[in-house]
Length: 342
Ligand SMILES: *Cc1c(COP(=O)(O)O)cnc(C)c1O
Image 1: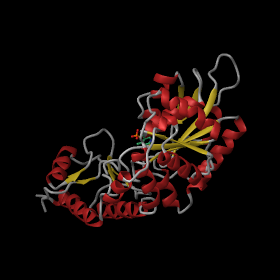
Image 2: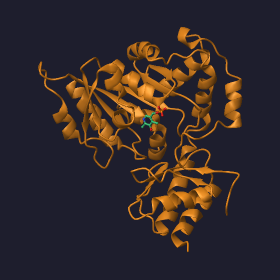
Image 3: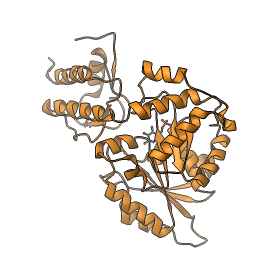
């Protein structure tokens, strides 16, 4: 069962390569200078995604990190504060960008099992209007968060709380389409509970590059300025936006296949004695507690499977566009045989 021709790469859903049809759409894209607002394909992508999310305007950016950063720079000024879960991407995995580049102070709160801070903790974290305190401007949530879908009810209540206290709500929706497909709801059912949303095209949707930030016309007008300031103004970016438009048409509903494959791999691993929670979307986290990580890593490598086994956390396996049913079958057998190997 040794394979040399084809790696089954579970490290992330960012490893996908554009399909031939997506490449053709990129090849055929009509382009112009987008910094001058003259790229029709970029404009079309921004408007399409904004309207899918029920927002007035959109902004195409090179990455999810930059999209979140631009959102934070637009929502918050120097010395302002945003409330955020302590395991959230915007707090933990973006190099402290909001602080480094915007003098924006994060106010991290512990995340509960559902994937966001407790609503009462959020309410208590909002600072009173007093010269001693920074001004609390924003709540940043994430959906999906580590592969889990934030319950709609939580999002609705969090948004109501923000509105009661005059806060804005930014949703890091890097994988928000995984959430809508898993819930069987429309994107708008989720995004109506946020003022602004950042959506990645280069994760489950399978494009090579890009994220879109959506919000009000006024917000996006200011965000466009911050995108330029942070070096994210791109020229004939329609070549990239075309991949996004293609993905919105062809790669959203198929996320259900990734979720089904993640569930079926999880069932096999559970039966083989691995410890993990059933996945809600396209990510499994295998408890590494009693596993020999080094041996497992070598074993997977030897059998054509890539997974990040050597990190501090549990072993994360992510399904995506380039992982098919027979890859799941192969990987399941590799994991099973690791436990029964001589
Ligand atoms: C990947 C990711 C980002 C950042 O996207 P990049 O394009 O890698 O910069 C932001 N938030 C979440 C939740 C992500 O998974």
